[in-house]
Length: 172
Image (cartoon, rainbow, N blue to C red; front, top):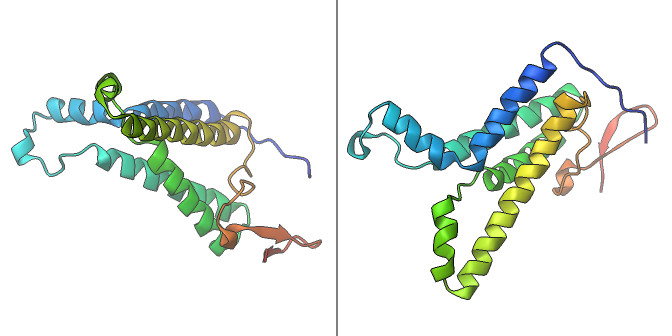
């Protein structure tokens, strides 16, 4: 494994702090959704969007696009970058799903099987949230600009090997 070059600039810390806000909102996007709706004095009947799923999908799409751009910047092929972006988008959907405290309080009245599925969903959410958070922390906090290009891709089309001259070739 090669030596990782570290890159920091004056914007690394402020950007990391903004990503922190992004991830805090992603813990429970339902709260932001309803607060924004109340601040804008929008009633449900006149709203264009009536679901906090919009925030989940927007955050996931943005994270996928961000990861795609970082992969392209680091010389990953377009095909592999797209596979990583899809993976990041799917992880983002899990990471930014909304589970409110009210849902957790109501779980004691659920059937055992449904409760297990809910616990699994919560575990997947926090696992994906933590993984994506560590990617951002490594990118901005530790200055590892290749973290998205070097992440493991579950899709076979996203796996590449590097030849001796540095060319990327798809792994069979």
